[in-house]
Length: 71
Image 1 (tube, rainbow, N blue to C red):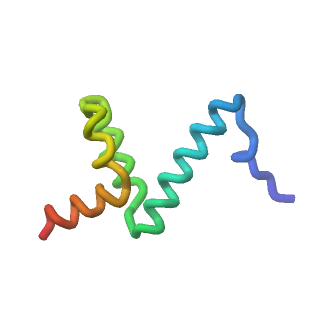
Image 2: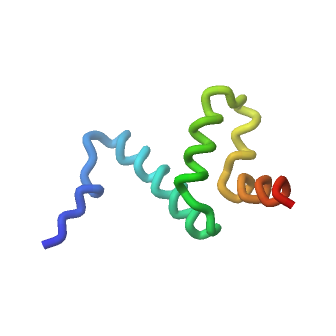
């Protein structure tokens, strides 16, 4: 019997939060981004980030910005 603990959450809000995190991780994987590297950079920048900067931190934009910087 396989237990899928991730299917059970303490509250509806925690289920929503988990869905957002899983979506970010899967988007990173589909874009060939290491999710740990992406999340580390985003979570490090988050405390000083302005709301207007948030759109540039989506996985696709983040990857594009890194590729531009590395070239």
